[in-house]
Picture (cartoon, rainbow, N blue to C red):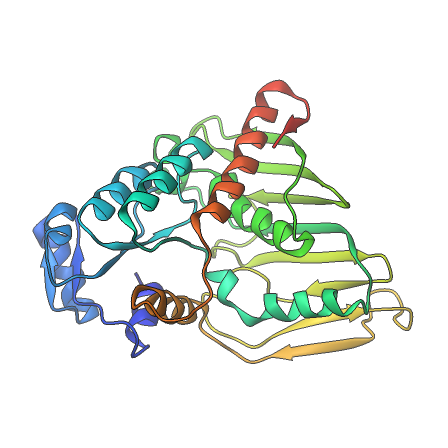
Length: 323
């Protein structure tokens, strides 16, 4: 609420007219603090409002499928927080319903709206550092609150769903392909039952990606420790601030080629501070209005869920699993 709603309110393309919670008091309090006109004490009441064109759905992961379906049934366009569902089978259900409803529904991966990823693709497409052969990602925060939904397995909590999805999305983006197989090593918290540390390797047609994500390491602030780097056939690239941008700030891409020494880049690409949540709201609003805009269809979310499914299967089998 502290990031997404103000970002949406900052763009003229998006008007926040209502907010819903599971009870009236909470809804009214949230509406008052955010300057929102209408408050509803149930999600269904908001969906029944004919004055609403689209909904942003930030509910716990295990509720995504049901409420995405209800929103589509109510004729609303949907922007749903990642991960879109708990598995690929649920994502496939959403795709089938979307095709019948003829509405816009996307998975809210704010990082994809940040211009650094287009810039990174431009570097790769230029051939300056060759083709990617290895990607490495890390994302960490420390959260030991048993009441937090990210620490509740029944709500779809855990490191892989919450932040591993970022690493998977980034790896698929830079290789511009889908992994063929995957293997994971997962450490579960004895109290919560969630994966508190997940490390994985993804085998792509022309390279490998590896990542480690943890909900019990690094600083307390969400996503404060993060890394994404590439080794390419003629050089390397490192992103300074790849994933979480809770406070918009400028960031850099470090590019190394035959002139670079050690970790010193041969050049830096500086990108200005942007609010990736506002950019997401602007782009999605254009799609809802039928205007030309970049889209990230649910098929991309389904591809991510197939990787997550394979990694959870690997936890059980202890072996490589086909994606």
